Every structure is written in C-alpha cells, then in structure tokens.
Length: 230
Image 1: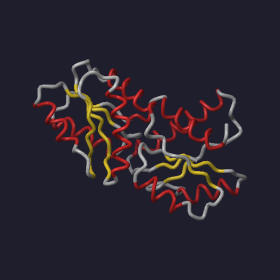
Image 2: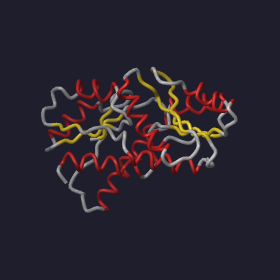
Image 3: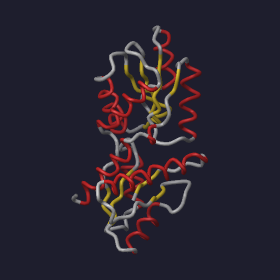
Image 4: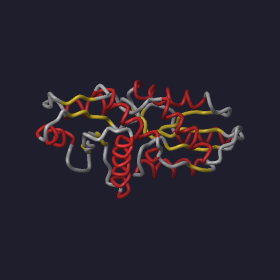
C-alpha cells in the first residue's frame, strides 16, 4: 500500500499510477508477484488511506504501508499514524526518503539539466516547520554535495528552512550558474511553484520532479520487502 499525499493537479494521479506500475514491474522481474500494490490517499483523492488499508485487510492482508514521502515530516509522524490508528494489522515502513539512492537520482538529474562542475545546485523542497524533516532533506543534500564539486544547497517553499528564491538569488549574485533540482515526487502545484520561483530568482534551468527516476520504485520495493521479511 503506497501512502500518497495527493493533489488536485491533473498530472499528479497519472504520475502516481506510473510509479505504482513500475513497482509491480520491478517486483515481477525479481520473481515477487504474489501481492498487490494499491494506493491510499492522504488528501484530494479516494480511497483515503484508512479505507484502502481496511479494504486490503478484508481481502486477506497482511498490509504493508509505504509512505511515498521524501522526509519524515508531519504526514509521516502525525497524519498516517492517526489515519491508521484502528488498523492493527497494518505495518508502516519508514518513508522512502532520506536515502542515498535519492542523492544518486539527483546527481543524474543535475547532469541531465546541464550542470557543470562549476554550477551551483539548489535542491528545492516543499519545506516544513519540523527540524527533523529539514534534517532528512539535508541528509540527501549532503550526499549530493559529496558528488558535485560546485555549491550545493537546499531551498524551501515554506517552513523554517532557507527560502528557495533567496538561495537562488544569492548564488546568482555571487556569479554562479544555478541549476535547481525539484525534490518533489510528482508534478503538481508545488512543482509548478518551484519552477516559477526559481526561474524568477535567476536560475538557468529547473529539473523535473524525481518520481520518474528508477530509484523511486526501487526504494518502495526495498521498504516493503524489508518490512515483509524478504
């Protein structure tokens, strides 16, 4: 069961369905095909996570819930536990992020965006007021920094971390070519805001959300395999 944030953006659900299909294909290629991969939504879509887990449990369980989140912020620490308070049989894994595989995906996306060794890379994330969530993002940023010789920083749309527009603007003023990587899973309002904010602040280019990267289904499979004892 993928616990998915949800969005009213028309491209969001299609991106999530593509991720779900990629997980099924990857598991089948490894000879693991005796399970379903279902979706449970935290907002905007149906079925909501609690209903989806209940239906899966009635169909014969057990149910492993993988939060399709890049950090353990409010949704992972509060929303999901509250929604599943009555689902005694559900096992909830840690979110897919942070993980070194995500930094690997960002390294590749930076290259695809045309970043050179001298380029500054800004990892654009949604943001949070929870310092633990910011630390999760920073863990991936630090791993990316080990692979990119130019400056690497995080920039956020909201919360208490450094703002995306400020990070980009300051790096441009310092003379850097700035490439922004969208550290979000799917297209949507937030991804559109990242692109508009970064380009207005002077970034040369903005990469797409990372949900289409091969590391995402690999991480989902790894999380539920670990919880299921594979």
